[in-house]
Structure formats: structure tokens, C-alpha cells
Length: 241
Length: 292
Image (cartoon, rainbow over all chains, first blue to last red):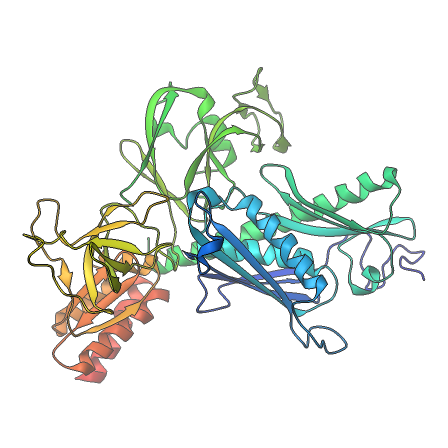
């Protein structure tokens, strides 16, 4: 199948190195300590953060750092075919773990020993790149909750189809069976916290594709910065300070 | 925001030049709002100075990071200072100490050397000296367990009352609302509360009876406690008589003669969260007109 037309356009009309439109909103869940909605094109996820709070299960308590838990689920209506079992399957368990590990790397867990931080992410609309979108949403929600973080984590995916590196794959490109590299970075610290790839990719192309994904992450990071600053500014101006 | 962690650092610069250093000023100006990961200070260029860091700031050792530089900005902390001719974003590796921001907010400074990041959040981080409203969750032989919206339940020793002895231990039912002071807030241990002021007097601390409690963000609580008095409370106070207790942990207790007054006041306060000073005044005036 042709994923990049001879004119250099992708199926959804993007250039190979173009991201989908991103949009973020802070404070979507009233009861949560921090929450955010993050959209990447047609992918839409919602994240809610609770904590730091008392550890619910005493046996899980860690004495020198906070316990971070993450639950990823997909809404029944998020995909084309209605989902039967939105959580608890192998895929969502794996993604929950991936998100947990990525967020744990940026949260300063040592500052909040013997407490627990819960991150809930739900996919409302799935169109490829849900993993990245969830990580971005979780970052915003954590920042909204005021949980101390070393840096913002941002994530973006990139693929390689028709011998072209493509940024931010959508569902059709994702299910083409080509390589899909998901990268999560700490933009200020310039460190990688997540790197995943399915399928195979020539080693000489890998670096290009990863670099492309990192550029995507940085673009997301810039946007997230703006959203956070805008949010703080609104709080400030309401207070009249 | 009273508990600051002490950081001994070294500096040749005076504290007031904190955000004015060449690296920092080209990187961000003082009106900028910070997000996690931003570096506000490079300590490698400072000598013999003590600064106090409050919430939202953290000192990183062996920090490896990127700096964005303005034209002609100098980077200190690397072997040879680099001067850039055009504003570009560079990433480099250097091994030094840096103060960086860990939550989104505004950098605040109080002379001579206190720095913190101010933000509004729903959950409370206990700080020594804060007056908070807590709810008794359980009572043990030595302590009452009190929920102060923090990461862990707080302990209120049964003897921390004015003239407290083993003989006269106060009786608090589960669910009692108390106005208390945080006396210990160390990480890893539950925070400790007290129902007396520093001199051992009861002051205004103790259980709050009747009235109505609601929760707000820590930002709103700080606004209500700010001086000069915020427009909502000032406007309401001119026409109505009521009692109010505001905890820095984002709990507000209101009491008045008539329940309708309590409702009016609490609604006005809750609505004021998203309003500016002038809007607050207008809102209060409208509300009061409707009542009279």
C-alpha cells in the first residue's frame, strides 16, 4: 500500500515530518487533584492524578519513596469496533506499566516517602499513538496536581514506511505493520526515558527515525510549556497578583 | 510557605542578582512563569552564600542539562565560557549544581535570601507554621489522627493543648473540625500538629463548632488570608456579620447567625476563585442587593 504519495503527502494529507494538530486542556476532572485532556489529531485521552495520598495497601508502601501507580484503559467507544474488554488485557497492562515507568522517572518520588500517587489515563478516541498521548496527558495532569517533577516528560512516535521516516503515525499507518518507534524524553535534561519499537528497522535508519521522534517530543514539550504557563497566568490574573 | 530547606552554596554575587545573572537573565526574565525542569540558577559561579529554598525549587547535583541562550550570553560552569553570536538553543553537558523548578508557577523572592515557587493546587503540602483546618479521623492513646489534605495523616498529640496533662485529655469525636498549627513537617514522618501557639497559649486554635466547611484550592485559601483583605471578604464583612476560619490547606469554615447567611457567604467565596478583584466586588454587591 502506498503510504506516501509521489507528491510527498501522507494518507491524511500531512507531510512526512509533520505532526498532527495537538491540543491540551488542564483541569478536566473536578474531583481529581490534577487532570488534563490531550489530543493528537483524532487521538484523544484524558488523564487524572490523585495524590500524593496515604498508601491504600499497606504492604505496597515504600519507606523511602512514593508509590506510583498507573492505570491505562480504553473507552468502549474509543475504537471503530466497540471494545469488549476495555482494561485488564495484556496490551493495556503493558501500556500501564510503560506509562508508570516513564512517569516515575520524572516524579521526585524521594520527596514524598510512604505515599501513593495514582495516575489514571483513559483513551476516549484511538487513532494511533495512544501511548504517546497518554504520557503527554499524564505529564500535564501531574503538573496540574503540583507534584514535584524533575522535568516534563513528553512523548511522540515515528515510523518508517515506503522508505520514508514518518512522524506521529496515525492508526492506518500504525497498523501497516511497519516499524513504530515511540520515544519519551525529558526535554530540558536531554534524556530518554522511554524507547520502544515494534517490527524491524535497519540500524542506519533507526537513528534518523529516533531523531525525528525526538524532534516531535520537543515540539510537544514546547506546546505543553505554553499550556502550563497560560494556565498559571490565568490563575495569577484571577487572583489579581 | 514558611519552611525552607537550607542550602549552603557559594557565591560572589549578591542575592538580589539571583535572576539577573547573565546566564539566567538571557535564559528567562523575571516575569516568566516557570514549568518543571526550568533551571533558575546555576550555582557553580557562586561562592560563600546561603540561600533558602521553599516549595517548588530543588537543588540538583551533577546536573546535566540544556540552556537556551540569548545573543552574547555567557555560559558559566564550563571550562571556557562560550559566547554566542546569535540566539540559539544549545544543549551541553556540564557538571555543576543547579537550582531547578519542580512545579509550574511563579518564582517569588523575599529579602534577603528566600526563594520559592508559588502555585495553586488542590492537595496541600504541610509546612511548619501553617495554620490549617483538620478533620479528626481517629483517636489513639497518644495522638489524634487528623486529615489535613496532605500526603499523610497528621498527628495531634493529646498533650498539645493549653495546660494539657494526662488528666484532662480533650475528647474529639471522629469528624470534628479543628483549627491547628503545623509544628513538624519532615519527610518520611507524619506531620505533627499543635493546638497551642508557640508560647503554649490556646490562642485561636481548637475545635470549630457548628458552621459549614468547604474545600478550595490552596491558592484561594492564600488569597482569603492575604493582606490587605481580599475584596470578597471585605465586601461581605461590611454588610454581614459572620465568623470565618481559613486553613492554608484549602479548607474554609464559615459560621453566622442564620443558615442563609452561611450559604450566601460560602457561595460567594467559592465563586470568587475564578474572579478578579473588581469582579469579586461586583459579585458581592449583586449578592447583597438580592438579600436585602
